[in-house]
Length: 500
Image 1 (cartoon, rainbow, N blue to C red):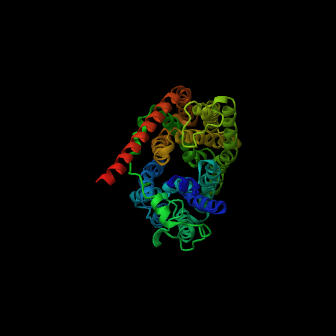
Image 2 (image 1 turned 120 degrees about the vertical axis):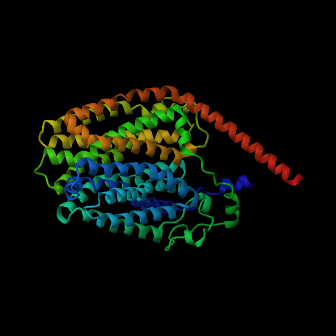
Image 3 (image 1 turned 180 degrees about the vertical axis):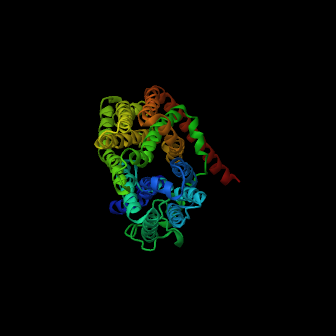
């Protein structure tokens, strides 16, 4: 009877319109992670002059920001899994607001305070994306999750597109402090919106939405979940045993195919971030006639490419994935999403087979960008190549990130945190080294070197396609064995109970 009730119970009581509303809310919140980082870039030369520090030392604030982008989701994501999405989302935004006030008031003689508060700012803003992804997992099934993720990713993608433009204009017209006042006001508005409207979605607290949470978890204006039938007692009993104990996510790095994918993603991302973080300095030195507003507009090239890559390349990759499915008759009708992973379907090939071609375009574009800067070509040259870099970068991040979750479907949050940790760690290392490399080698040879290192990761794609199915099948069998053991233990406890 319990099984029948569970089958009849919807995955989430929220209507489709309410789900889209929640996704829009968290997309708005997810905007501030990349926005708080990228809005800062056009002001780097200005900050170097204001604090009387070298560009390398100001870039250190970018490096530490990236380090905390990698570390903080491991902390906030774990807390959101235990204590609720709503509270952690609001606390992250509160931390962002407070840090922006401090940054706006930082005296130019206190460089150490700039470093410290940039770390605090990143610790607050970076985790909104991870928590938002958890919200989507709470309210949506696998069949509808792709569409929600597509809309949700527009917020985090839009940040790099508009952030530098806003930062350049604010720094040029009102000074660098105006950047942080703007972030303070915008994030405070977002926090207020979350307090007013964002419901709690964590399934260990509200189940599928049927369990009324304590009053502190309720939004001030509860406009979602009001029109659904609820059976709180039955729901509470059904979800009572769903809470999971925290497990160290770093253990997932012990799987060879997963570790290789994280390395591939990290190297590609680090080059992408090094290009983005150095745009203001490179363009300031190469085209000294540009002011801060015009430097910010240069970021529209890579930001616009990212938006286009997110909107259109995802559809191309989905189409190619379906082509692979149709080409394998044995796999027809079998899906990973049903909860029974299909060992026979080559999901590694389906996700990755376009990546080598995209990686080639990416590397050539980065090298070409470096030589355009080196030769001081017309500004249109590097801008066009930045569009290509922005277009191709997310077109590789998305399939690799999706495959990582496909390989660890029951550890989506943990593996995403690991991916973020590796990417931001490598990105921070490269950002700290990019200015010394540019000074020592020049832009042409710097990006030739970095592009060459990135190209060396190409064989990882074919290695994962080769070893991935065996590793995945082994994990599936071990998971099934563990599930059977858990069932036997549960049966033994239930039989021992009446006897006792």
